[in-house]
Amino acid sequence: MDQETRNLLNRWKSIQGHARAVERMIEDDAYCVDVLKQTLAIQGAIEKVNAGVLERHLKTCVTTAIASDDVAERERVIAELMDVFKGTGHLRRVNSAGEAIERVAASLESRDAPQHDHGNGRTA
Image (cartoon, rainbow, N blue to C red; front, side):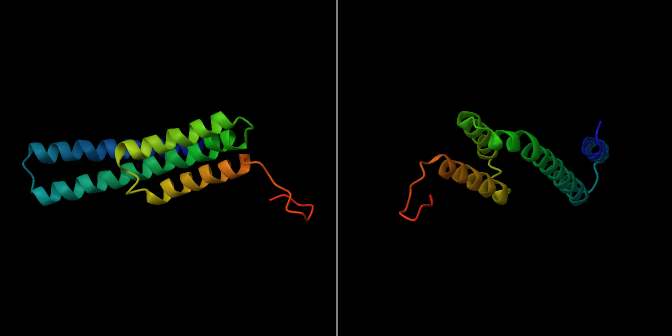
C-alpha cells in the first residue's frame, strides 16, 4: 500500500472514530450545538477524503484517458466525473473541480477539431 493510500485510510479511520463519538453524544443527549460542531467536523474530513480520492483519480485514470488517442474513452472519463458531481449537487461546493473538468473537456474538443492552415504555414 502506498503512502497516499495509507493517508486516505488513516483519515477515514479517524472519521469513523469521530462518528462513533457522535453516536455516543446523541445517545447521551449531549448539547445539540456540540453535536453539530462534531458532525460539521466530520463533513469537513469527508470532503478532504473526497478531494484526495479525486486528486488520485485525476492524476491516474483521467490523465491516462486524456493522453490516450481514444476520443471515446476521454469523453467517457470526463462525463463520468461530471455525472458524479452533478448527481450529488456538489458542483456548487466543488465549483473549481467542475470548472477544471469542463476546461479539460473543452481543450479535448479543440484538440480533436480539424486544424486549418492560416496561410502562414502554421496550423491553429
